[in-house]
Each structure stands twice: as structure tokens, then as C-alpha cells.
Image (cartoon, rainbow, N blue to C red; front, side):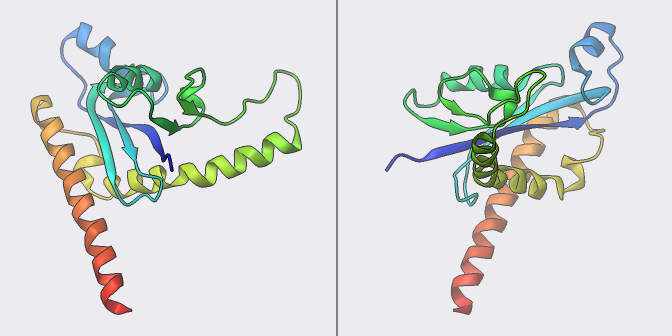
Length: 171
């Protein structure tokens, strides 16, 4: 049985860089602030983090992050993603609404089912953002960002494992 991994990205605000070139690089027009962009790939059950990409400039689009990381992941692996990943054959994305038209009922139902599969990565991102250092504006040195976020992801993996172990003991 082939497993489709779930992929999504999120942004975290950072201190405004002093250098004007770095300001342009880290400014996210979507969030209207300077930010870091991170990408998380998880198993479909949401209990295991497969891959984390950390600390890209906020202006980087999601599909670019995935394409760079794709080289290190398996070529035959399939993924589930949101509309940010439309156009990639390896990523199963929702149907887009046609311009000046309504989306069909069948496609709407397919989108709803895909969203049910994709929600696990959103829940995992929420768990990461429980930690203030991973959700509020990052005020530490930029060079420490990757180690801080990877530490938070390690704590999340431990926490998820701890929850599963406790649940088994209660039965």
C-alpha cells in the first residue's frame, strides 16, 4: 500500500532586517511583514513528522520550497497538498474554481474529502505554534532559528509519542 504524505507551509514573523536587500528578501507580501517560511511533511495519520524545512525567506513560495526538498525525497512518493502546490504531478491538490463559473458538486465533494485528509498537517502546525518561540515574532539571532524550530519539532514528536503511549496504557 502506497502512503500519500501530507505537505504544508507556514510563516513566522521575524525582526525587521537592517540591510535593505535582506528586508526585500524576507518581506512577505501575503503576511505584510518580514518572516521566515517553514514547510512540514507528515504521515497521513499525523503522528509522525517526516521532514521539516526551516528558515527560508518569507517571500519564497510554497511550491519552491517543496521542489528544492523534493530532490532529497523519493521520486515515486506521492503527496497531498493545498492550492499552493497546484501544477505538481506528485502532489494531489484540490480542484480550483473556474473563473466566472461555479465549481461542480462532485468536485466540491472531492475537495471536502481531500481537506479531511490534509487537516492532519494543519493540526501539527498548530502543535508547533503552541510554543511561543515558534509562533510569535522571532527575536533571537537569525542563525539560531533552525536549531530552535527543530528543537520544537523534536518536542512535538516526543509529545505525540507520549500521548499515544498514555492512551494505550489506559485501555
